Image 1 (cartoon, rainbow, N blue to C red):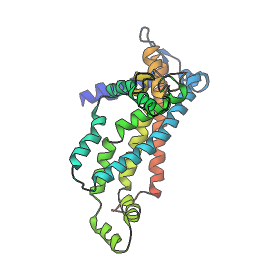
Image 2 (spheres, one colour):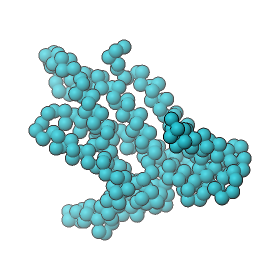
Image 3 (cartoon, rainbow, N blue to C red):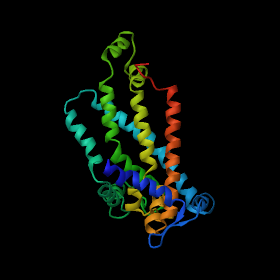
Image 4 (cartoon, rainbow, N blue to C red):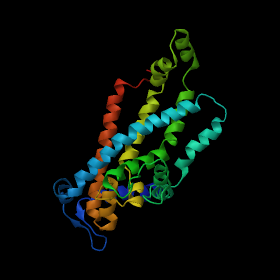
Length: 277
């Protein structure tokens, strides 16, 4: 309880207080009331663009990540030979440290020395400047994060849910003439819909918090193409030492996360099936 209060509750309360102050670490906090929030909404040119860029990234990564994780889990659930080996291979990228993963892909995406562009050159395709061109930086970050996340926790959670689907229901559907896709759509998906909701909520939160890949590989560039909201918070709080303004940005982010989580939970009543109800 003491550790929870000092390292978790305490910083949360402190950041909420600092969000109403002008604080640069070197001088005592100066109370400015709502000026930090006013600056974010009306004066910060990077606030809305970074928020929209993060939302656009999430709209791409979350559906692809969930679909890929479910597809891998369905393959592993078929009981083919060597399942444990495949499961380990799929999960290894998720275990790699985020910074190491970013450095690896920064080398892979190197415009002249990277293996990806080299392989494209072998088939007569001129590889793009992945991390150096504005139009390719965002796709590069998306590919990098999908590679690291599709075979991770979401896949294992989906796999556990698939193994919990009653075989009697699948066999009954098969006897009634339902094919493989019909059984998956009408039996499996409804039975694992609570798990889909769980992974969806975590996936949205994780996507909105995207930071490490952009920070290590592009520093938010080129031309702010990968300047995500979490990176905007970091730069203001720890690079420019605007701790008060950075705290205000963080609390706005909390509200955004709560809004999306509440929206997903509210809409889930229309499509999530709970066997106990």
